[in-house]
Image 1: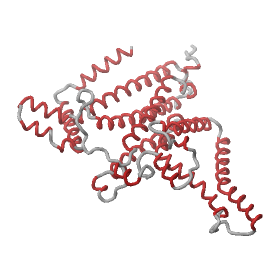
Image 2: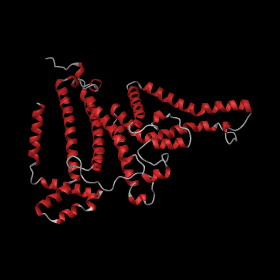
Image 3: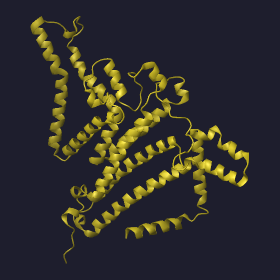
Image 4: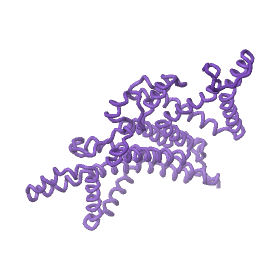
Length: 397
């Protein structure tokens, strides 16, 4: 009996799977989430305080999630090597990210292309790159000094009264370029790492990019804490201490809460979509050769990745809704008590400053978790989950 096999284009070989629309969809979702996350992070954590700008002007630098201010600070103290149209110094808004992001995509494409070649080519590229860097440090210095020795006689290439004979400055010039890359890397290092992780299937790069964003948020929170700024003010613009009144989506969430929730959702989308591709392809790569052409295994893989995509969107929507509800759950409880009793106590508590602060939202989320956890004794969650799973199965059929 001859075993049925699937067409060659639908087998579970990695080269074929990488062209599947499901895999490409997850990679595109992860890529767009990463770019949107970069923009939202820049809006929230990329500004200096008004007092800092008033004292230092537009060329002053503060450790914010933004690259043009640091490059303008370098340019005000000397010439920069990278042209302005590349760094986006003279641009505004999202245009400041355009060229660096395009360069990140080009580097990612070249990186993926190199990884598909042999190790010999990779070793040759590494050696060539190292030689070019060493030549950049030494050759301009040696040539200019030798020309000076021929025309002026012997002299040391430093501590000269005439700056043109201080040839040692040519050795330091590449360091200026590296400092420019540091300022660009504040914003674009996680973007490049994330893109490389998504398209070269590297879990380490994706988790590194995710960790970088979390570290930026944590450092910004510490440096803008009132107790820290009273002692050492580095010039960062702090987020509002009050979450604000819920005015968006019918009073579901406040503008600041929506911005922070957007960052969390984009970070979750980037991480889950990128890792989902790698996990599914790892599963397929571990299958025996015969199983990669077996229709049952192919159908199983298709069902697995379809379910993953459906669950991804479903879980993201549920997480976003429950988080928004949790942040305003205290308001809901107080309004519910006011309806039942109609006392002034509920109105006074609702207007209290503590509940509007950050730790007030922590209290609100804790109350929400307590109510949900207690609801398991009243609401038949297992039966509800059964109805949902049955409905999803019928929709898939």
